[in-house]
Each structure stands twice: as structure tokens, then as C-alpha cells.
Amino acid sequence: MVLILALAIVAIVLGIIGAVANGWFFLLVIAIVLFVADMVYAGIRWSQRSGRRPAR
Picture 1 (cartoon, helix red, strand yellow):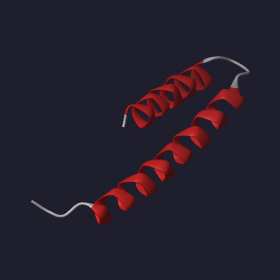
Picture 2 (tube, one colour):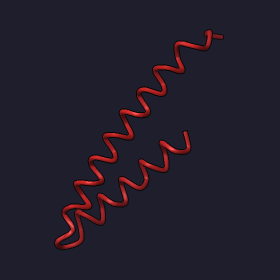
Picture 3 (cartoon, one colour):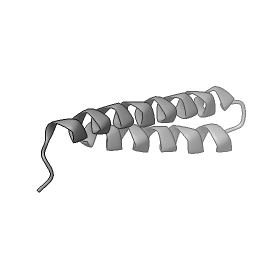
């Protein structure tokens, strides 16, 4: 969970820097790719976790 949150924060910061700084568009692209990869990773982890534990 900490890894997912840390990657999301890094992606947001890189996106802000890439959008604001002149000529640093590649940071915005990297941030978007990182954020999408983070959400896919979170989805995979949560879908695997939900199948293992019984509901209480």
C-alpha cells in the first residue's frame, strides 16, 4: 500500500513539474505512464487479495 501511494505521489509531482516547466513535456509523459502503471499494479494487487480472504 505504501508503494502504491508513493508512486502516485511521485507521478503527481512529476506531472505538475512537467506541465508547469517550459520544455519539460517529457516529465508529464513519464508521470502519466507511471500513474497508469501504478493504477494497474494496484488493481492487480487488490483483485488477488480479495479472493484469498474470507469476508467477516
